[in-house]
Amino acid sequence: MSNENSRHLYDLAVKHIPGGVNSPVRAFKGVGGDPLFFKAGQDAYLIDADDNRYVDYVGGFGPLILGHCHIEVVEALRNQLQQGLAFGASTEAEVKIADKICELMPSIEKVRLVTSGTEATMSAIRLARGYTGRDRIVKFEGCYHGHVDGLLVKAGSGALTLGEPDSLGVPKAYTDLTHVLPYNDTSALQSFFAANGDDIACVIVEPVAGNMNCVPPVPGFLEALREHCTKYGAVLIFDEVMTGFRVALGGAQSVYQVTPDLTTIGKVIGGGLPIGAFGGKTEIMELIAPLGGVYQAGTLAGSPLAVAAGLAMLNVISKPGFHDELAARTTTLLNGLQERADQAGIAFTTNQVGAMFGCFFIEEKQVSHFSQVMSCDTERFKHYFHSMLENGVYLAPSAFEAGFVSSAHGNTEIQLTLDAAEKAFSALPK
Ligand code: KE4
Image (cartoon, rainbow, N blue to C red; front, side):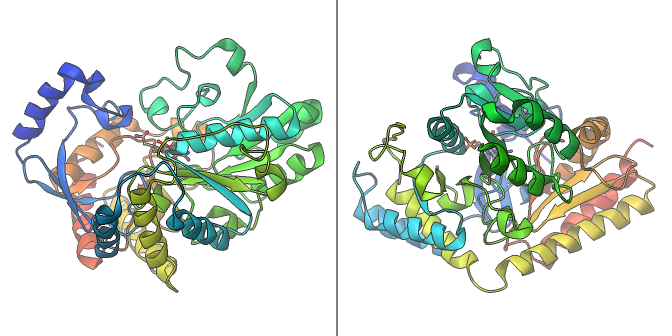
């Protein structure tokens, strides 16, 4: 498999782009080697600069739940292109997508569109602080909510991949206001709130952690968050940028039946274009400008192109049975991977919530805690990643990212992946 063109593009890229990438996790630092450059995506496949084809389990890190270039998304974009790209003013489509989001996620009574997940979480936290008049916030180790200054504390995703969970350039005054608790540790939560609950503006949590690989909530964890936030008057923010409309049509909050006060979303609602959103209870959302005193704004918020693509995607995934079918295919994939790892004598386990999954090179059969994620064999993952790549399967270039199945992943793609995994597991150093 030639990577000559990718290598050439990388050499050119590093000249004017830091690390040759526009987002750190793409740099392959977590797996070694130089990053691939891609030129096309079609259905479940990515095509790189050397015309190598890969079954894609990154899906743009979550948005592409229909696979690449889905006909209805492309058609919606084509139509919008004829109408206009940006107006700096409101459009009918923004009303439609706001109505659709509130219909699919009833905890969201009012929603504001932004242009990234980071903007969504940053705005939601500012809103929670404005609403409660409190400054302190709570996040969880290994969770990632975008590169918001106060949230780059023991963060996951690219920060974890690069081994820099805390960032330079973030004033101590900011991080002093951020309390980090262990994910899935209800007793630590209880103790913390007993001592500090009255000072907490909000808790922000990934209801299914997808940035320390994929770690679902243990029974009772989300319920305890809800109970303590209610008791102490803190705003509960579910960061569903990744899980929203992905793990189920109504997101993780519909799977676990725990209702947050605010939710942040993104990825799927933009159909692959830049978008984010935050929303929730009317009494909180009405503090947002121009109605209230919490300022928030964005030049391209509600981008006609992103909204057109997002509406098309939401309409397709709203069809009955869509998510059940996706979850079933994901289960088939994971069962097949587990069988082949067991046959090869490789310590391996998986997590799954809907069409979002995680693979771990670890002896234990249940991964629920950050400490377990950090004990996984990342060297084995590196070998596995490159072997899968050589056999036509593209995984996230990091042991700390979740994987995603799309509706374009059919039996052919699942079988190709399992055949690649059989070779990869048998080639792993014992
Ligand atoms: P963006 O600002 O990257 O659009 O979204 C930030 C964000 C917020 N919340 C959650 C739960 C997220 O997963 C993300 C971003 N996800 C990562 C992938 N794990 C983005 C990939 C990257 O940084 O390149």
